[in-house]
Image (cartoon, rainbow, N blue to C red; front, side, top):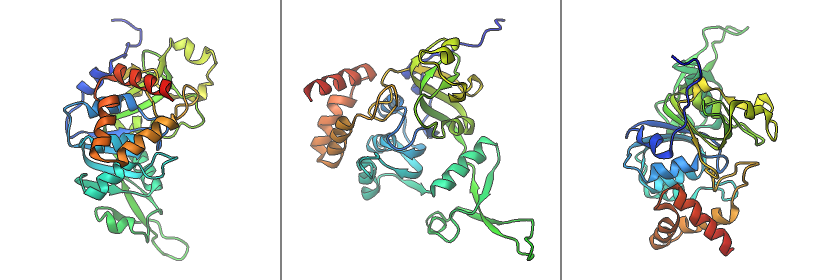
Length: 299
């Protein structure tokens, strides 16, 4: 038996082919920032249905909703950042095409991921008490502290249930073939929590490098930016510009022109969206990137 770590490199098609309808899929990133868009686009073109999507949502949620892939959605927000409300998500909510929706407070969402990452059934927190979050989510429960305060009062908390995930999809800047992965931008978001909360994690990256190259550079990467270790990762996919059109600093910024075109098509008629879909989304990832390059040359 080899003592070397396993090479976990996979194709986009192999990742999507390993998933099943009805799975709970956590998607990392934040709004329109560092989303695993190549994997999301492949999900949209797959036969998978009835997914439970868990996300601080951006175009990942919008595209999956427009493609009819979401059976349940747990989210804290769904935005394109410079476009406040993701238009495909807004359309889906207005038309009621997502069968089951849980809208949580951002802090509750984080606490749910922390509970799952620690293999706990729930964690208590104060956020949500006295708000309509408990009204609109009647399945949420409260719990009294077993420890009285100085006045003998047992304080009440929201018992946030664990956001257990079947699979997590995240996008980072660099990884080695074994699954050690790093971010180069200003924020790790909570991709490590998604990975720890999931039974399986697939990470797409802008570039795969050898293990020494993760920290040796160029440019050298501080070890603190090694967000995922290989024990948390089941598959690594190299997808240059795989985060497009979301922000993946410093490899690429958010493509605002393309995002504007996406939002206009999503807000337009069915014919507008079909034209956008046929040009950019109907093919595989190579076809998408070629179409984006042609779009950029027209600007």
